[in-house]
Image (cartoon, rainbow, N blue to C red; front, side, top):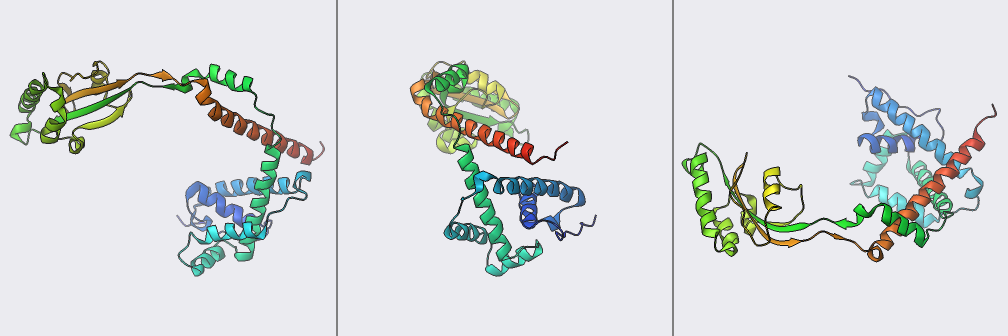
Length: 292
């Protein structure tokens, strides 16, 4: 299917930049590389982005807002750094109906937009200690650290092409290893290095800290049924035969409000900032809407 021609003639200044941003954000491709349906989608996104930007920069809150030339140049330099050379940058800009001056203007508007939105967001209501405690109590599960088990793993795979890895031979080998661990679990790491066919063998079978749900269901059930320091019975899965050693158990615990307080405050402040910005934008849209 042929790609549609992309032309931004007749569109508002800055539209080409928003079209490019929408194409890259959505498809990681330039507008000229998109199919017709894809291009229609990014045009709608570009229309919306340019409309919101124009509305914000035309608001009373934008009066007197200023960004320094150094900030603009840093933004331009950040874009240029994505290219191998200045010629590559200029060529890409030309392909997207842009040049350096248009890019600089678009980035300046973007910086102005961000500054205005930050100022509007700063009007948010303060987050109180009561707000923080209420959030903590309502969302206590968020502040619970799950039980972890420090575990090691030993695997004998099943492969009928090899005599030592037939189901019967593999099971016999694993039962022999299990018997050697029965009274000396501390040998698990050395035996895993010697016999395990799992990549973890290089680290003595070490799996690290494991929480429920991380392993195959059969292994998960076996590990979390073990007392600390115990080795599992032989466990069979589609991969083969397994042994697990539960070296240490770290019980689940509730994070205290005192430790969670700063994170909750930051979360609530971000939420209030967004809500404040959304409400302000909605008011701008209502004010700009034509009379019925």
